[in-house]
Amino acid sequence: MTQILLLNGPNLNLLGLREPEIYGHETLADVVSACSELASELGLSLRAEQSNHEGVLVDLIQAARGVAAGIIINPAAYSHSSVAILDALNAFAGPVLEVHISNIHKREAFRHHSFVSARAEGVIAGFGTEGYLLAVRRMASLVAK
Ligand code: DHK
Image 1 (tube, rainbow, N blue to C red):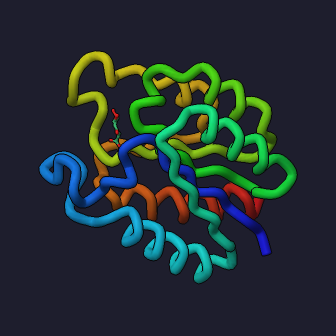
Image 2: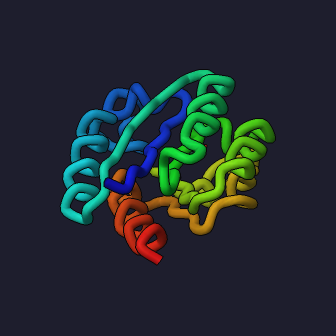
């Protein structure tokens, strides 16, 4: 079965607890289970990982080479700082979709730029946790091509 990697960056383990007025009340476990369910309806298998550490995220992206057909990533704060994550994604052959729960363009100026966007086929921002489901749907079309 075609595998998709869903990667979440720092502090997203606290989803549902952390600044719910920005990030909502759903937990990461809720998001992962909804995405897994949708992925299996679409004929995909979903592997979900979260890390607070940049190097671990790089290792997970490298390990996805030749294993996952595509990557959906919310790099969280590393979106705005990590050339290492961008480089790792550039070494991955399949499609990459970037998700931000909040609309980063409506927030502080330092959140307006994402290094990962230079690599992503598409970016979803400001759709709340529903953005992950939209990304799974889009990924299903991208990997079917
Ligand atoms: C999540 C974070 O943790 C922030 O650092 C980003 C992103 C925005 C989000 O909206 O999902 O700036």
